[in-house]
Length: 231
Image 1 (cartoon, rainbow, N blue to C red):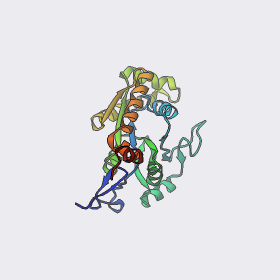
Image 2 (cartoon, rainbow, N blue to C red; image 1 turned 45 degrees about the vertical axis):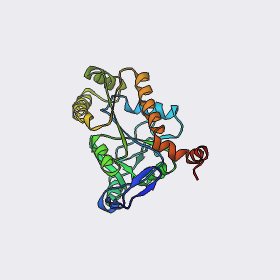
Image 3 (cartoon, rainbow, N blue to C red; image 1 turned 90 degrees about the vertical axis):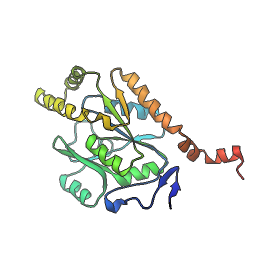
Image 4 (cartoon, helix red, strand yellow; image 1 turned 180 degrees about the vertical axis):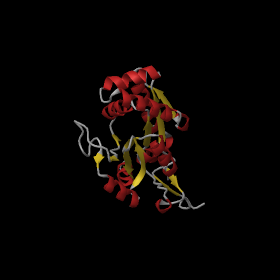
């Protein structure tokens, strides 16, 4: 079998390529998919994790939704028009994209490739639809689903955010049920009851993947060769 081994990841050149709507790459960094229903605390968790750990970034998605008060273009999202979004779809610029509550969200594959190839661990905050696309294109991606401790707690969190009226909250609760049924598709499950506990669990997950044999061999190849004195 004519496989190429690069950065500890095996790439088989007989696999489909980007022209076949599949995007495969060998990287130094790890790619994390984090999904959750609205109000489960996903964004707060990944933001806190990015502050805790070095060499970890959150992917900035493109979206057609309007910018909210306090949001910054290029920091929270890349805010673009529907026409611009459709052009990027035509150009196959997205690693994944989906429609959520009438707005489109997409992840630019060039941005993902650039960061991973720099050895940066990258988190994608996406829904189950986008997660399926990512897993198909990049089976080495690590997937995590975050659940609330109860439906009552979820409704309370959505209400306390103060962003939506009861009609919208009811729609979000219905969407949450449709989202949560997909949790078995993920590798890891975190229950966000106590925020600090959930954050510790997410941090330990990332650290554990940094300590795998493949990752350590890649990142410390010179040291290992010197220690073992490979001839």
